[in-house]
Length: 118
Image (cartoon, rainbow, N blue to C red; front, top):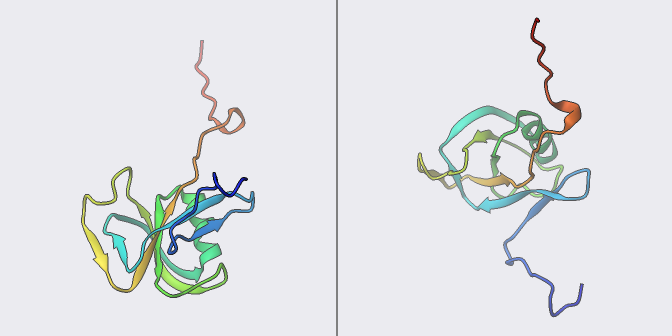
């Protein structure tokens, strides 16, 4: 893209690339995370968090502040926050929050098929 029209991210903006090359996770908060439903709490690499979050369809995950790179290891929780992560308040200090920015639309091949008896 032309430099004049290129959209620049803030200096603290970070993203995680998926295998498809798109950015599916963006760091939404630093040293802050939403207190919404925990689907699963675990330890592992940031790559493992993103793949597990994709499998569960979570809205994002908390991950320790300062652990960098896809192979950085830490403990946190996969979250189900819906469309509003502020409804239950926030925790502060030790973890960042990575929001799932991918769109998960069902395709014809993965929709369930229901049959009725005639």
